Image 1 (cartoon, helix red, strand yellow):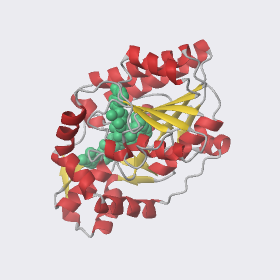
Image 2: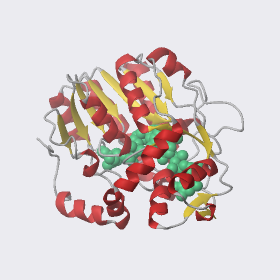
Image 3: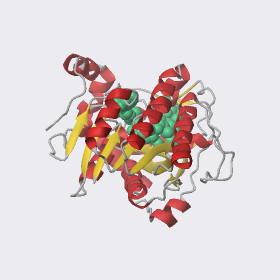
Length: 342
Ligand code: NAD
Ligand code: DAU
């Protein structure tokens, strides 16, 4: 199977590439323009695999996207490339609209023109908005996004589903809860707190810290994506989650214990604007129809995550110091679309 992954140099995308390459008959092309969130170090272990190639291309570059899909004759596209951080979207939503909305439409159109067999739109539970104290998000929950990020993801989902209804395009949408694990960019709360802890810095916690997220280990998410690709029904949405709700304070205390830090590391700061109170995914449909079963248990997977940041200091210190951005700017800034690692 020939698969095009977008956003494969990011956190989840890099885990997905490794998962896909475990299938002996799969070849993978990775379309990633390498924004601040992408990192070649995330795929260093697979870069020379002859079944892998990298195209440094933006999903918004219409002509180049078209050429890659024409030449690639892909059986499937798994679309992860996105601006992914809520706080950045609060500072300004335009790049979110460009990448997450326009980029999705450009890919959908190219996939349609070139007869791609399946398009997996990788989305988020944030499109459903915020829950009160009770209840879960199901695939039938209304879309009520509250941040520019989640609104742009919801727009991408709707374009994908509309392409199925209008043109019969073979589209599947997945909506996953909060991921954690190795290679997550340290602007997201779990790696931010772990790395701040390792640097002796405080942990900012927004508002009262009672906001709830539903955490899933990244390896479980990418397994869900493989199942959605291979077993999902065209036109369907699948929620992916691990039934693992935690308040932010609970996450902080679990991490303090693993790192041997006192509660005084937590420093309350001003709340995020429009901060969603609670997310909770009902993954019953994915369990029933795709056979999805998360394998990682929270305490153990969080321990593995902390251990990874403890043993990969260079990876995150270079990000936090900005050195990696200068490095890639110098070395790759002037290059156009290219293949990497062949
Ligand atoms: P990330 O920010 O770590 O990585 C995003 C990747 O996309 C980077 O490699 C970046 O270079 C690339 N990219 C950005 N703009 C691009 C463009 N215009 N053209 C090509 N490449 C571009 O993101 P992530 O956390 O790995 O999330 C991946 C996807 O999964 C996103 O679509 C996100 O909405 C979704 N998702 C994330 C989570 C989560 O908890 N992180 C949960 C559910 C869904
Ligand atoms: O639910 C899936 C979503 O999870 C994905 O779609 C997003 O791409 C991903 O970034 C994530 O969004 P969140 O906003 O939930 O993740 P973040 O790590 O930014 O924040 C998690 C919680 O921690 C949230 O309630 C805000 C809080 N927080 C965050 C930061 C960065 C803090 O208290 N302090 C912080 O410094």
